[in-house]
Image (cartoon, rainbow, N blue to C red; front, top):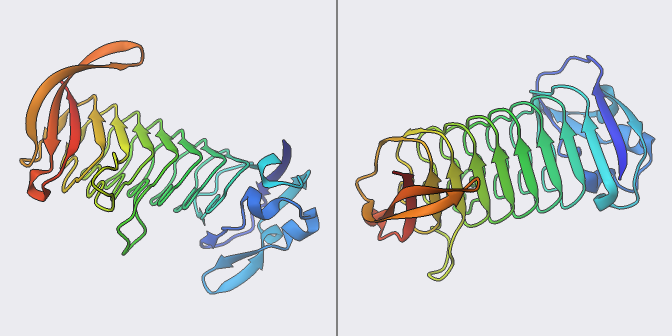
Length: 266
């Protein structure tokens, strides 16, 4: 793959909205055209090259374009939003909406990602090696359709409402999560659609699967307070990391006549 490197140059800003940082946008342009791409700071636009030193080789097609952000950018939003192909590597933190509406390609964040990462994602893979904020893989504000496909992996912890209104795809969190994991999952699906999958290796304070209609949630840690709308159906062994693990299997949320499945490590 051809690689373009963006290195923060120390120029001061409040918050940047940089949806243009995407292989779909970079591919086929010259370096000068990439430097001239517009980013938003409040109601003002600036060229991308005002804030980043930009170097490397441009690919003709998005699937052949890699972007490396050579540093932490905790106040740059929308990195990789709506991308369909290619690869992005961020060597630090990112702000909100990283990988939002993503349809393909891959994003690796070496640090933390703020809220709304991977919202309404349809394909591709988003890996966050640090922690993720609230509403990971969820719906956009005011919408009822969350993540539809693709894969999100968080090596650290995640916030509240991950997988809200989730319709498909997989979210894996290696650490702990806050309340409301999988809330409203499957609500926008038809009666035969299986829904998405959430795997939580750590703990949650509670409300896992609240108002869930369809989908599957695995919790290998502890849930402090179980939702009363989930009924214990059976116990079952499921293979995780090459080892058979016993789970209590619940169905719910019965308050919504839900058919979701919640596996809690026995």
